[in-house]
Image 1: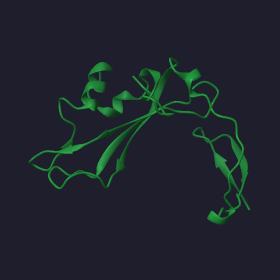
Image 2: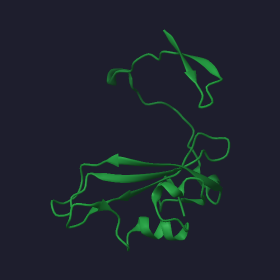
Image 3: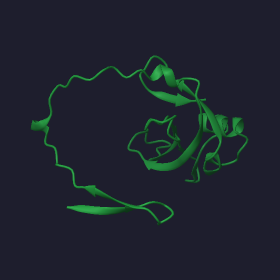
Length: 138
């Protein structure tokens, strides 16, 4: 079975065939060349999306079940993006947001914006997240 996908302008359609559903028993070790993310470090790219997500982590005091994900546009001609995650807090009145000294507040200040949704379109530099094999930005 196929279905049509329409772009944001509504003027382009394409067919996409239904993919075979995988089961755990179908999975196996495969041979694939190592992926070198280091070549993307230092690339300038714009923030494409800021979204609010649900979380199940935290302590009972100040427990918040929301966090913000800031994601870049695709890096170069790849499907690779970089992401940052920011936990939100709850004040004594039950209002959810971020504190003045939080990492989100520092990013907003650095980008000279007052709220997360205003990060979209801002340019950032891709960096490696410590010694891990994940990309983030500064």
